[in-house]
Length: 95
Image (cartoon, rainbow, N blue to C red):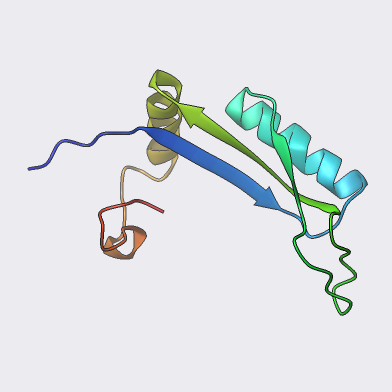
């Protein structure tokens, strides 16, 4: 059996709008990850969705080291330590 190595854990919340809903998503991500999240901008303008280029539409953070392992353990504990085969990519990346 292979040993599992965790180098980093990337968490993101894509809201699609800026404003109060994005601030609420950032607060939620901060509670879960215990880190200050960063904000992501839209790359292109999409009129049908009402998104302008350069507008903040997502929030994300990266957890590394021991914190990532502890966080992953907490999440797997909630899922009763069960994973599907479709959760892994061809290069054995989880996601």
